[in-house]
Length: 315
Image (cartoon, rainbow, N blue to C red; front, side, top):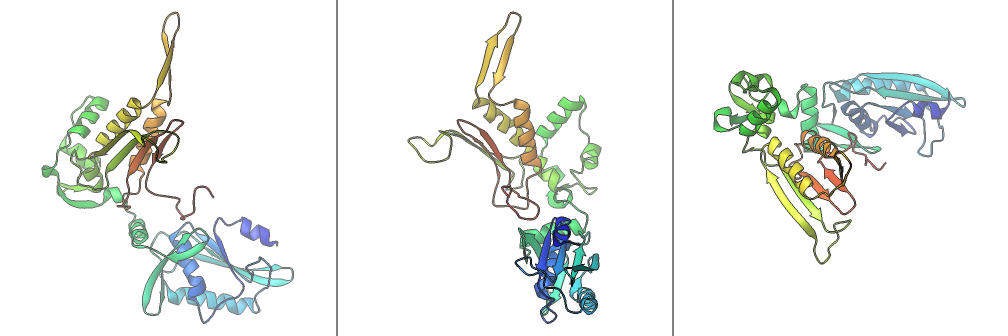
């Protein structure tokens, strides 16, 4: 067995030169982070420079690892312990599977602490991370949560018009319930709050800017056009598309029997990108909003959120 093979099989891994028996938090935080994330492998007996130092008593070490997980993790994640031999030395791999009962806490010093992976580090889960983990552990999504807003206090003219345009039918109360917009007691879900004409969700906003140049650097005139929209998701989608149309060039040429148009940006592509931005944005991130930024050479759609494990998309 080669070390490269062990590491190559894991999308997430951490390595320890030795098993810290008196300081289990030093490695159990990775167990918590892996279970709260996409899973991962913890390797004991490997130094930071990837040299194989081995574990003195692999059998005893595996017993300690198993016991510490049982007594200091809540709930107990699903793991797989294995011993391997590399260059005549014993190493241990602890494979931690992605958990369904999140958050997975490390229990020690009288505290319950959940960890998540940020890049190649295991860090304490922030408040927003904990909210996501609790929702995942309950098999719930943000949009399905019931709010304190009563259906009767809000109008849905934009949603009803869009529904009729697509189906040629009028929306009925049963449709609102079947689509998960209201619950049986007539209270809006988060999805319903986002579709209401006057959406009470503060971060349901869209910022649109046509910049003067190829970046946001200040000049004689910074922006050529600028709009801020708030309200229903359908309103944001419609106004975002209108802004993009208003600030995009459209070339055309005349042929014998028709006119052929060459838009600066395919409208369908903008539509798909904006739908993704509005629907898949992280609505738990209250300090940001969706942006459309149009430059001389490109159109960008920004949506709050990020890579699942916290790494940068550039990496």
